[in-house]
Image (tube, rainbow, N blue to C red):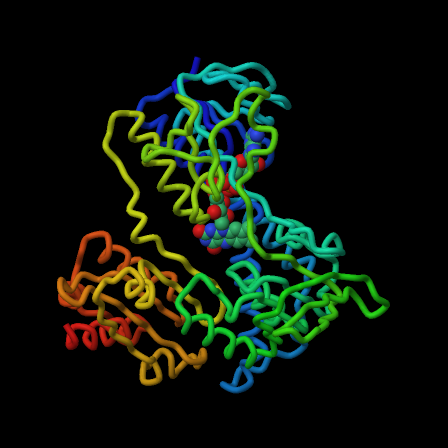
Length: 454
Ligand code: FAD
């Protein structure tokens, strides 16, 4: 009998299992595919590895403007995907070592919860296992809506398996994070990219200015960006896969050698519960209480399978908080300060509320902004229009949100999350100087402009 049995070894599951074992709980983890889950095998890390490769290519290709002449430049797709695979294998091996080092029992196979406290595993380490508590961390999978012909499109899982050549053209359905990152990768390498988004802007869940600015930048990079474009059907034609869509009541058609469908992910719990076990669900997946317990006593759920925010760091934070609570420690996750990053060029990073969201909630706010045309690093690298915006409560001065669009935004956003989590004001964030020359210096300017309004 284990104290805890975790199902799924993505960032949520492996973080929870390692933390639980360190806290003295006898812990097992079951994984049917690869240690590291979606994040290391089909998500965050493979996409960022591909984006690193395409950035190297793009930099070399653009180098002539600054005196760097790359002769015979060539992007070898099988080699790029082999590099992506090496990075994933290295990091998955690190997860396996972390779990073993923490004293977690590793089980390979597919888990089914047969009763509270009982799990049947089929596969390499098949058998019936008992545990005082079960933690579900089975993640999410891509959705495929019932659009006629959509079986001709790939999901991100399939695209990441690789191809033997660079597509001449690709149509990407979905202008959210995943669609935008793949559009960046393929356009960097010189592939003709069409990006179709049903809403009125890219990244519709983020601050309007980010999506609008991104569309301009992608268009400049050669991507055909079509917003308010709803896909009706797909068909194979001699020229490629035709994606028929309606844009503001006008029919349109984009043809690509390949099509990626990137319109969202759903919680994955297929076949997880034996007959008779029916946990409550909500619009996101499994329903959980404030300590991540499902409606079945002793069965918990964290990460993409139950969270409205599907991000690796959210899954990991929930996993840690969940098992810390089991071990009698008080722990919580500050969901007001969840950073979201998009690794396009330039990067985008946001945390907390946008000005519009704060106003919708009736919160009096002020926003400070720095457009980075005079920032030395921005002038040197010329990544396009970059800016930083920070919003604070107009009366208390507490920082409530920030949106950044500039190189390294994903590394800078953390300090704004810290500020939100700790109720800090612009003045407190300005207490320490920022190094010169950096992109981060623009944050000081945005904060100074905000402090001046408070
Ligand atoms: P997962 O990582 O999905 O892991 C679940 C694991 O459970 C899987 O390994 C699965 O095989 C296993 N499993 C499922 N059912 C069973 C069963 N019955 N028995 C045994 N094992 C089972 N997030 C970010 O924060 N940053 C990013 O840059 C980012 N980029 C992304 C790019 C792409 C293309 C995609 C698809 C996602 C990206 N994400 C990113 C999201 C991130 O990958 C997920 O939020 C994160 O992996 C969720 O972690 P998790 O632990 O909940 O589940």
